[in-house]
Image 1 (cartoon, rainbow, N blue to C red):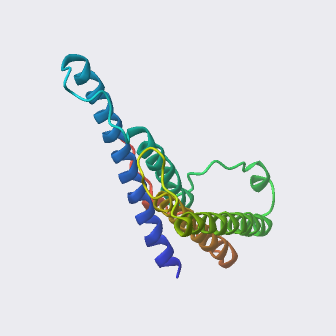
Image 2 (image 1 turned 90 degrees about the horizontal axis):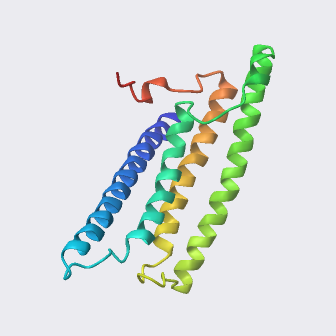
Image 3 (image 1 turned 180 degrees about the horizontal axis):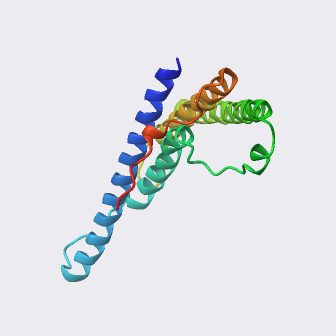
Length: 175
């Protein structure tokens, strides 16, 4: 089960990176379109969906990057307490913190699932592009689900005394 969650975490990182690249391409296209419209009067002044879809992509890149970041130990943590307690208590605190993260993310994922489902059932669409709102909401919810599973895996790893972080997943430094 832990290997499956690790694989999903890697997928999570790749999807997050893809969303970030797509966001960058969309913003560059918007800037290029704006510049060309200043020179060529027949060129449209903007991409109508650029700002809306960039917000969807930004939310997706945040949620999709979170699980892999947790697995490699990239989230901001205050380790002052952990460094000053005995090793057995460190593990107990890690289990407690991961369980709390799991509980919070499970609640948040559940709430987002209900929110996306409600948008689907009501047929809600964006006012500017007629995009069904359940789709970007479901994408963000899936990213949250992957983070929830990663917190569960971290709690299990901490309880079993397994390594909490996989440094092989970290990006290699660029020199």
